[in-house]
Image 1 (cartoon, rainbow, N blue to C red):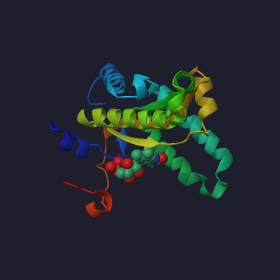
Image 2 (cartoon, rainbow, N blue to C red):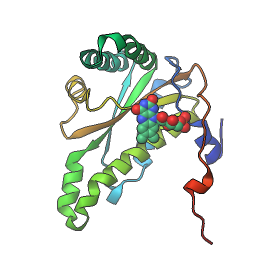
Image 3 (spheres, rainbow, N blue to C red):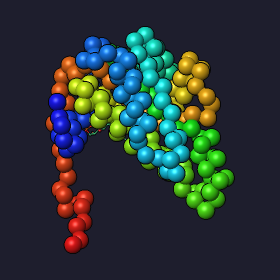
Image 4 (cartoon, rainbow, N blue to C red):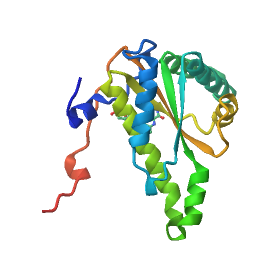
Length: 199
Ligand SMILES: Cc1cc2nc3c(=O)[nH]c(=O)nc-3n(C[C@H](O)[C@H](O)[C@H](O)COP(=O)(O)O)c2cc1C
């Protein structure tokens, strides 16, 4: 297990081959996700991120409803490949659904008019930070994860199935579970394209 941040950052990868057996208890995973999100920063400490954690049958339900939405849209000749991909996600132990509460965004816009135009973007930054925090926290426990975006296709089903408030806007779905196969190779563009250092 990694102890320093950069080792941990390298350990966090997109893992598609996920299984149901978690290396720690479900309650520990739930607490880990909650704490990672709570410790993540947000604009004005607005804490706009909202989370739905699905485990066991509830996780399977997410991918069944996604499959049914895709069935309506994907051409029949391509559907098998799509359905196989969904099987892979359903094979994970659970999922974390990340939302941003639009009520919080609206309230901030009314409260701090000078920054009004920035709050939607800052809310998007906040979910990204929360997603990364959860992804790294899971990696630290030897739990693999991948990040999916079937929103807005599944928004209504998710809202109805788990009684999610209408103001929660779905931003991403993170599957997590046992690491059944390692991540693929990762390539990097040249540093000189990405970084300017002045000193
Ligand atoms: C904002 C964002 C959106 C992503 N969307 C998807 C996605 O919809 N489906 C998917 O399989 N991976 C998605 N990924 C994962 C990236 O493909 C992956 O992080 C990238 O290839 C680098 O690989 P790594 O995660 O192993 O470092 C997303 C990642 C980010 C940061």
